[in-house]
Image: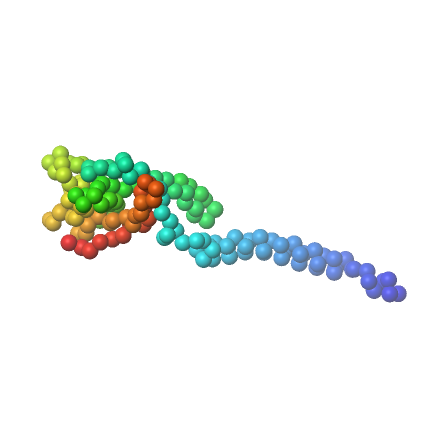
Length: 169
Ligand code: FES
């Protein structure tokens, strides 16, 4: 009699099986959603990352474009993203690392990009211009100076952090 009580009926077996499979499927679907929702919390902040960009001995008084690549992870997709900066040494031998992103609508500026203004940064999108220190030229489309990267020099290598906006001129 007691043996009979311990047997699992067909109905109970189906209930247990369906509950188990259903729970497993629900967990499989919910886990990525929860991971996606809290992903920024789990990630270390990229704000403090400094990237090795150039050997300081390569930096001259003429702005040069330096590029570096960082691995970017978006959810499950990983890609290499290339960043760049215009870097030179000013008259006080200080390093000036400028963002190449135009403050008008975000095109890339080039040093001496217009032969009429050989000592300025030039944005080809709407004729935006900046002086060598990144200050926007009045009466051209940009309304703010080029951003300046945070930087540090370690063992002869230039490291750049995030570009920091400056006061409008
Ligand atoms: S985006 Fe540079 S001038 Fe417009």
